[in-house]
Structures are given as structure tokens and as C-alpha cells.
Image 1 (cartoon, rainbow, N blue to C red):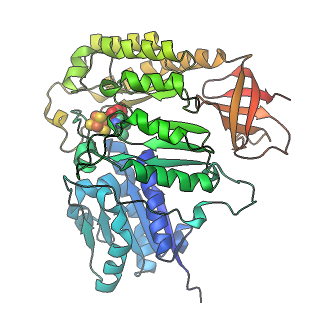
Image 2 (cartoon, rainbow, N blue to C red):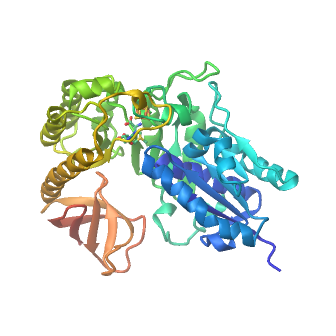
Image 3 (cartoon, helix red, strand yellow):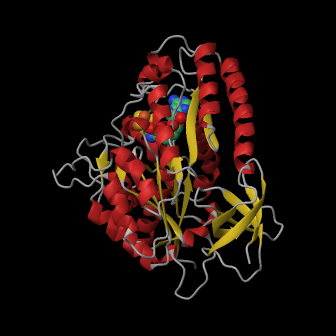
Length: 457
Ligand code: SAM
Ligand code: SF4
């Protein structure tokens, strides 16, 4: 009889959720559950959810619907729903989906093993969704050995050399369209010593690239609830850069209003800081930015972009844009299109506005019809695709330092990796190369979403 208990985790949404899932995986591993990729084999299933847009939420309910048969076959199976939908729906979710045993919000992920024991022993659903205004991210969870390759083993996936590290949780900005302050709670920064301890442990296990995560990393360092600590984000970056074997540092996401000169200067000073900046603008219209409560104008945003370009001319800029926010006129939308042409982003994540529970904009009048949103979205994406292609063509003939992530998804035997600016490069090279190795590649062709090149010998 197979006595090894198995855990299966499905993650929706952002990188913060990916890291939260990894933490829950570590905790389950410490509680003697080993991970499986086969949902049919699982003794516990965790669905880590996202509610940032309506579509993301619908996916969760459709997956839960599909799990009914599994639960009928194996009533001892524990089904847990974590993340923002869990926080938002709480008991309602369990009432609507009685097959769910555990509902836990983002502040409660560290309690997963305890909730599993309670659900198993008591046979009662466990709901953990209180949002504490004085929440602090618990101290460092030691990485599970399963997360790493064995000593002397060649890395077999990017997971073996690049990792996310959460540096803060929650958000105080209350953009009027956004659910995050209600699902992830008030902003809290993690102790810098704790962050550095975690990164040093990762570095010891062969990790070379770190992405620092938070909803608004630019405001990292506001005092902790216990009154300690005043490290700014730029100071934290310098501390991470001082760890010898960390070769690449990235971060996401940044709020334009909190982008300081000090942080911009880091791009000139810290060689390991990758020249990629994801700076969500949301709209190019001041009227809409005001209604969104973003705290900057298009002109202020563009001035910061100019400074970034002056300090680091090779910087790769990406952004998020919402179309069809309540009250967005053709003129407002045109202002967004104009901004795209001015900045010439390398890439844009664009979304149709959707009402989110508790967000202020739910009550805004002048809602935009779905056909208009769709038209604006495809117009914006067409225009951006042309810009992205032009941007990528500008690399033709240049030599880029590429960190190898594996074989190309095209199945043509080529290697695939990323530039310092985070652009995917597929290139020809010998089979003796390995994942995690940094190599020079000459770029031969710029495509819409990637570059093609050859190893410089
Ligand atoms: N904290 C980041 C910031 O300040 O921009 C991003 C947070 S959110 C996880 C990612 C993106 O989802 C946002 O930048 C926004 O473009 C989009 N988004 C958030 N709420 C939305 C909504 N109600 N409808 C459509 N898109 C939304
Ligand atoms: Fe949401 Fe705005 Fe906070 Fe980003 S800054 S998480 S968009 S409230």
C-alpha cells in the first residue's frame, strides 16, 4: 500500500501567488506531503486563486466544479482554496462549494498545515480569512531540499537558478478599480535581515537570479508594525547586490508615484540590477488617472520615463493598461494610444476593465459597453504589437548576455534564455551548454515576442 501522502497545488494569477504557492508547498513538504503533478494522485489539493479580474475568478469556480468527481471517489481528499478569491468569498465560497475543506486568505498561508490537521481531525471545514491590520510576514520559511538540485547535478529547470522572494505584502493605495487592498490587506514590509537570510540560503543552493516581489516595491521600508527598520528599497537592492553569487536582480511591481530618484540612480550604479522596469501606467488620460486614484499625471509619468531612459538608455520598459474604465471617452482612450507611441514600451499587458467587489469604481457611473472595451483593447494591442516588433528589431546585430533557461519551446533543438532586459532569446548552440549558464549571443532577428540569434564563439 502506498503510504506517502501527496500534495497538488494549482496556481492562478500573479508572481506573488506563485511564491505563496511555493511557500505552501514547502510547508506541506515539512508536514510529510510530497508534491505530485498528477491531480488524481493527490491527498491534498490547494487552489491558489486570483480575483484581480472577473475572468480569473471564473476559472477558479470552473476548476472546483471539475473536482467534484475526485472528491466523490475519495472523500478523504482535502480540498483547500487559498488566495484572493478565498479572502474575498470566505464562508460564502464553502457554502457554495461544500466539497471545499479549507478556505484561507493570503495572510493565512503559513497556517496551512495546522488547518489541514484540524480539517482532518474534526472533519469540519476550516475558514481562515480574518484580515489583520497589523499583519507581519512570518519569519523565514527554510527552503525544502526538493526545491533544489542535488550537489553536482546539472540544473534541469529555470527553477534551479532563479527564484522569487517576497519583500512586502498588501497595498495601501486603493486604486479605485482594484481589489488587492481588500484581499491582501494593509501594506507591510518584511524585515530586511530576514530577506537577506533567505537570499543567502538560495544563493548557497546555486540560485543566481532573484526577483524581489511586492504590490508596490517602491514603497518598501516604511516602518514595520513593531516600529523597527528603515531600510529603503534602494538600500535593500544594494544589500542583495553585495551577495557574490547572485548575478541578476529583478523586481516587480512599482508604482509610478513612489518611483524615487534614488531608485532610478540604482540602475546606473548596480551592475547586477537588470535593466527592465515594469511601470504600470494604466491610462494616458489625466481625467481617468484621477478617477483611478493613481496619484500622478501622464506628464509626471513621462518625466520619470525620460529620467530612466537618460540614466539607463538600454532599459526595457513594460506596463499595464486598463481600457474601458468607467467614464473613459474616445479622447481619453486616444491619450492612452498617444502615450504608447511616446514611450514605445517593449511590452504591454492590457486588460478590459471589470468591476471588482468592494472596489470604489463599482459604484461609478458611465460604465463602458463590452463591445467598446473589446474594440479599444484590440486597437491598443494592434498598435503595441507594431511597437514591440520594432523594439525587438532594434536588437538585430547586437550582442546580448543570455542566461539559459532550457531548450526552446519551438522543439527545434535550439537553446532558450533571457537577456538582462528580460527578453526571450532562442539561439543555436552546442549541446554542451547548460541551464543557468550565461552566454553571449549575437541577435540575428527580432520577432514580436522574442529574439533569434547564435552563440558567440
Ligand atoms: N500593484 C500593481 C500596480 O500598482 O499597478 C499591479 C497590480 S494588479 C495585480 C495587475 C494589473 O491588473 C494592474 O496593473 C491593472 O492593470 C490590472 N487590474 C487590476 N484591477 C483591474 C480591474 N478591475 N479590471 C481590469 N484590470 C485590472
Ligand atoms: Fe491595486 Fe493600485 Fe495597489 Fe497596484 S497600487 S495593488 S493597482 S491598489
